[in-house]
Image 1 (cartoon, one colour):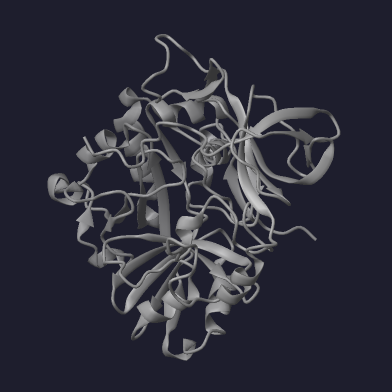
Image 2: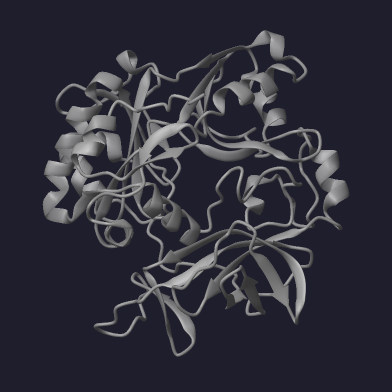
Length: 408
């Protein structure tokens, strides 16, 4: 029996733009448009890209001392997270496994929102309801009530600013991982010049300067078209999931249920999602803490890698080899076409020391899960049924990322 795929309000718009539609987490979404994934990836690095992310789920929580409850439910220490500042944390189970990851929005002391992955609002709400004290809280799944657009790239601020009412005040004191407005859109204090109420968040999933825009579903097509029209002269194009995947990987950001999942959330490139002290101990109690403490010495290590050309292996089933030994598996493998090597070192389009006139040919990169910790620069091989590919463990991937750049 076939399962009907979910569709965002922009589904027909994507098809008219030539979107190559695929099943992603039960949603019919564009993988790329006629421009192709490479051009879309590069557009976000040099200009801007526009993504429909209406498949993402928003959970609204309400109740007394919700901060304390969520501080136990999430790996991130949110005890001092101020209203208007967002945080990133992992919802863990008793084993320290990731149920899902989430961006957390404190709207007030008694109203918080979690943005989780497509199809995950039900499982996350069910998980939260099993935690001690959950009976004091009301959880609302806002699926079907909001649209979400992601405007990403170094030109995104200059594209968006003319469309925001009272822009100077809205963008004042809006650093990375902050937001203005409310998910109760009719009462939001942030509006576009056409009157559309929005929650505007300076976040994204690309590593580049950008915004996530939550807005009424019936305004999504109009705002999408206005953004593309306004941004055309600054290189804005619509982008699909393929570019989103390659961009987030180059920015060393995990994909839930692929790079994090049914294994302990420890020994990975995302320690900032954990409440760690300088000596590596945990500074607060949280669901899964005991399991992570016990697993630290024995759990696999998730590490970034970068290659020497854009060739890839198939991530599914690919093995990691070191000195002829199989030591783990490949989690994610993409080609970041904004990367290249100059005299052996990794250089990006935004690298200040890139050679004049230099154009990258792309480098393979991603994440491996292996049984031992390896230092950056260690050569390993990725092996699938077709090839064995030489890569090296990396401390970071795409240099010069613009996410934290000042708005100007």
